[in-house]
Length: 282
Image 1 (spheres, one colour):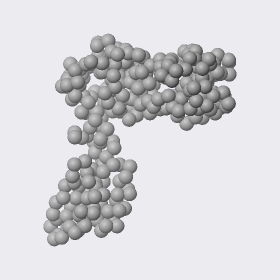
Image 2: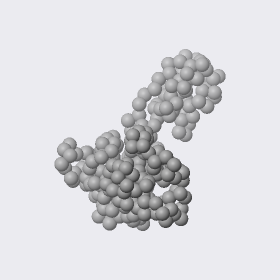
Image 3: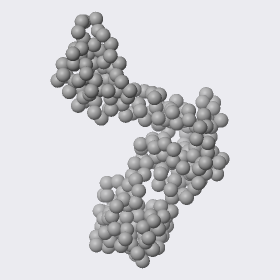
Image 4: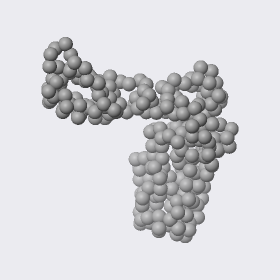
């Protein structure tokens, strides 16, 4: 049986549950459920605080887990990232009142407030900067106003919260985070149960990024057309009953689909259709 840690709340919880559902796994119906056994897939899900997941996985009590890269690194746990999931993306940066600092090199002797002291302490050490790190749980923007710190380090999305507090981000980002799958360091890479789980999630990622495109085009234009729609390996090309015409089918990136349809139409393609992909194995 595969034992998997899943975020029980916060920005990671909903998207993680949605991805697991798309991958064919049962998910809890009530937020009070802490453990769910999916007998059809021989998987047991444990709903835990996102910040604790890497620690549980590193202990070996659970096989894998879904958490944020920032939380993984901040925990210092002996767990490693094995798959990026593409949601809950964020950027972690330093911020302060204008004129306080322009880069991490300026932080020597200052106090930095953050909810991610593990990440910040490592970043400061990697840059040879000696600064004091103060741990706060949430709303770190007020730390500067109250004189607890001169600088904060926090997740920055739009920057609105910083501006409202009279602060601005500076220097290079500390890190870019997103949801990831983690496992214990040193765990067997070829565990068939884990590989099956990863293939399912990778199938969801592919299905979200691509659509299937079908179109008809004259045979003499096929080479130019398939250059626009090469597919993942190669497109399927089939002769049509109408002599001189062929049907082409290929996967194309969702974000480029409309542009590709325009260019195919200009080449003489007709009956151009796109359909969603609900699951995939590559």
